[in-house]
Length: 110
Image (cartoon, rainbow, N blue to C red; front, side, top):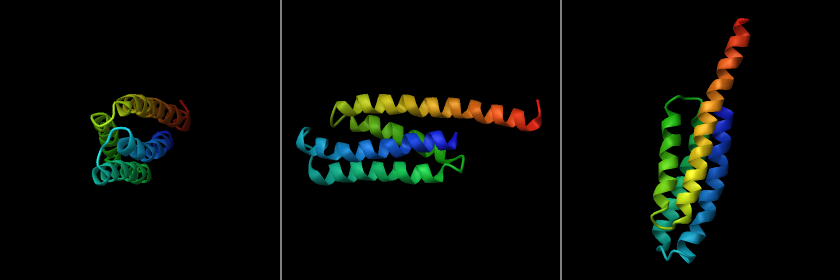
């Protein structure tokens, strides 16, 4: 599960960082809040990807998903991005959990 979730967060960080020029150029958001929110959220995604060995870091992952959706209030395209990556995040958590369960069963010999 950790590898799948980390991959989602890493790709999401790139997309969030690339959204900063869109926030500034297209949506007319001031530079300082656009950089702070966009790059701060991208950095949080990267840091969270590295912390996923801890169970509590998955809560941070959910906060990243909420943050991306919140950027949609500045530019509507981020609502779409937020829904897409939120779906990938749910998929990574659910399928990753199933894979770990199957591996644990095989290790027990069942």
